[in-house]
Image 1 (cartoon, rainbow, N blue to C red):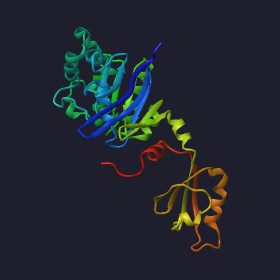
Image 2: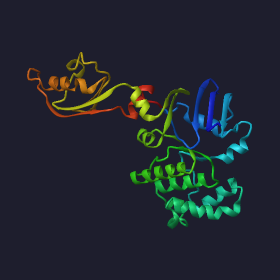
Image 3: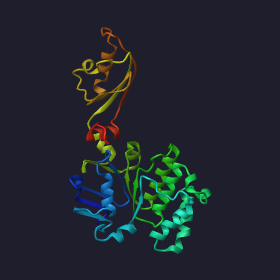
Length: 316
């Protein structure tokens, strides 16, 4: 039995000479929270638009719960919910009227809509503000209302673009809890985000897209382990001016100066060589002599995975 919520097979889409999606393939299981990561302009939005049927693909195959968005758009629209990056709510309407407007467009049973709206407003902790204009809402409240709107017609698959953009820490964790609660009820989420901490906290698997191609796909922990490296963070007084020379021969990788006096150094086996690192930093014969303020060994983060696969150059 096929348990796939989404199947993307060898999909390519061009805008003139620009190849926005290039032979892209990945699958999402039903009930999974799946991450879609990539630099700006990597093809994430185009991929979502192709899957949801907002764009007509040029090559390849896509299925959403077994339906093709190109030939069966009505079925796909009923199965999906979408929370865009820009929270495009009607600012002068209150929460109830925003949801009623959505219900008129997407809900098959309008008689059930008022009860469903009240339940969603309570779930999103918006009941007490149900009659207030949305323009008076905080960023977190707007994102919760946008999620309520996406859930109103009871879709099976929800696309959430930058879930916690502009949301404070408390609001962020509340949104994560709502997503996980919906997952527990069998919903599938595709989360597009540039927040690596968010992807790490939410996603069971993720795909990193760059230049329209899938360049890495796995669970976050597996992707971090696959880097095969550790991180040593050193803080000294005074700062180490030439760390490549000081630590020559220890098999170091990338060196980043995170602050004026702190270094972040990628190595193969931190525990085996951290003693030698400390010895060289504190050696009496060195000029200037350094005092070790702190040392920390860490595993790679999802940021490290992302930068490893996509590079450190700025994307505009």
